[in-house]
Image (cartoon, rainbow, N blue to C red; front, side, top):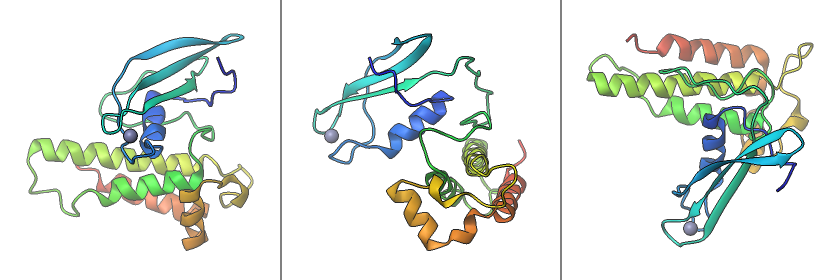
Length: 184
Ligand SMILES: [Zn+2]
């Protein structure tokens, strides 16, 4: 078993990572067993495995589990614990935040209860993803260090507008999303 498996601080983070790394055929989902495995040392890992439902290719992801697992809070999305992610870079987190925030209608007041719940969940995910971008900024810095961004998606986000990775702008966007959360 690999002992270098990347840390997934929450199951939500692991699932997001898998969504961003689809099968070669393009299909992101697969169904199969999830198991807790020993990685060596004191580390435990989670293994997700199954066959792609479209092309049949076997898929497998192994993540290291945190020493102290956090339990999910119902109704809110939490990806991490305030530390920089090992799975997604800051540019990917910003891309994820954009996707979630862009998937909700501007005016949710006319929606039924189920749709409003979905809006709340998506905005909660957008806010959590913004917090993950901010987690990469060192305490004495005002922006995400450029070298933290390594992925193709992340680099494209950065090249498009590096100013979006400034602490001030990230906080303003996160606060704006917070205000857009539909009251329960
Ligand atoms: Zn496939």
